Amino acid sequence: MSTFVEKVAEAAEALRSLFPATPLQENDYLSRKTGARILLKREDLTPVRSYKIRGAFNFFRKALAKGEAPESFVCASAGNHAQGFAYVCRHFGRRGVVFMPVTTPQQKIDKTRLFGGDFVEIRLIGDFFDDCYHAAQEFSVAEGGMMVPPFDHKDIIEGQATVAYEIASQLGQDEADLVILPVGGGGLAAGVTHYLHQKGASTDFRFAEPAGAPSLQAALGKGRRVKLETVDNFVDGAAVAEIGREPLRHLKDFAPEAVRLVPENRLCATIIEMLNIEGVVLEPAGALGIDALKDFSRKDLKGKTVVAVVSGGNFDFERLPEVKERALRFEGKKKYFIFRFPQRPGALRDFLQLMGPDDDITRFEYLKKSARNFGSVLIGIETKDRKNFGILRKRFDEAGWAYQDITDNETIAGLII
Image (cartoon, rainbow, N blue to C red; front, top):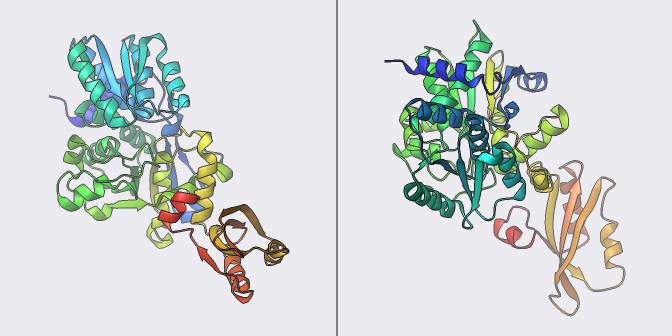
């Protein structure tokens, strides 16, 4: 009976019929910044710009090798899994049906259709993922379809483990001191850690989860799978309410402290940083591993070889304004205030004279007239240096302005910004 390592090697060899090994690139900018040798495993450079194609391919390959020939392969996804699934359907010449929520952006629908061509049918069902997932399950039972899960299956994990096979081959005689893995459902993390452990590597691991979707950390803390009551969907490629059963079987012995929770706004700053400085386009989930480097001190990383897996680059540029906004707020360079604005001639001029040369008003909106002589005004201010807000507040106070900083007030900001 083949070992896991042997099965992964076989999967990696078969995968070469689709695309060559993705690069393991040393990043000079991040290396200088951290004092370590930072290597990026560029899964954003697969044909579908994410690692998801690996698991889907291996699932199909093994199902077909067993002589299984369903009426159609089926998946429920609005993201990278759908695109990898579609690409593999076309590769094997098999019919695939993709269930997506009605709310899926047209760009994602078009890309999935492009990768699958005539072999894939897309069905838009429901407003939320759970709706289309249940529809996909019902279709599979009724029509003799075979569900291809995004992460919770041993063949999917085996396929994702080919990332580790390539890393080990590309490092040669060297060994990574630390591998940082993004986590959503856990298939990639399970495959990579299991493979390297089976190979006898002494590599340390850290896992990067969105702060708003800590399903792995919650499970490790409780010693069992936990379904999160709420999930922040901003990091859509990793916003999973419950870690997969099969992935957790491989990850259960890690301590909760091995998981680094990445704040969504800080992640936005990393996306902008990599785009502006390195010209690398990353989706939020794809930037998790790079962002997690910020949680290590220079002393912790100095002289070490660190591999950060870049899981995907399917970034919708319509989201860029939101990402830039959140990055500026994290960096303290943009804030929102509600001012009690006097209703008199010259009030706006007086206010503008308090602004410095590096300060810019990006939003000015009357919310309501609070009284005959005053009105509530929402004012957004952006500056080049976060320290400028200390100067501005002092000027506002000395001039007698009544105001409230609502930047970090999620309730108020969520309603009016």
